Length: 160
Image (cartoon, rainbow, N blue to C red):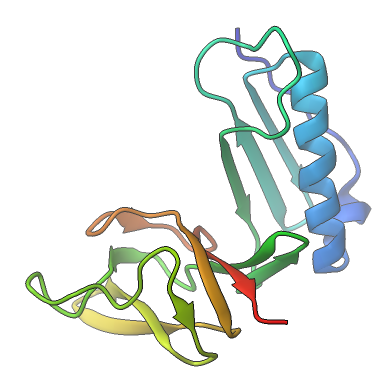
């Protein structure tokens, strides 16, 4: 059974990126502790939606299966890496053409400024570059699927 719960802590998430990451972690813990399948919170300009697939687990789970964070910034820095988000609404493409190799794959090492993907918006092809050097840990979007502004596209473990 899905339940939604709102928290009035708008001031917590309206500050820094650290506050947003902390909010997501706390909400993930709350989702697990209460056995919820879905939780959505809006705090200022930040909207966080957590959703777990399948039945609620009997034992605690460390993290939800789906995490969506929407906010104006282009990336979220966290202990697990940097999330590169869609700077616009459009269609996500992993390669420059249907027959070309993808720009990057999971496990690839990328440089700051390296092209990661293309987002087509109103017949314009916009190259999305990496904000950090590091290794691509996860690609969140399937090729040729629509994306929303602020939607996570890539998780990159920064080079240290």
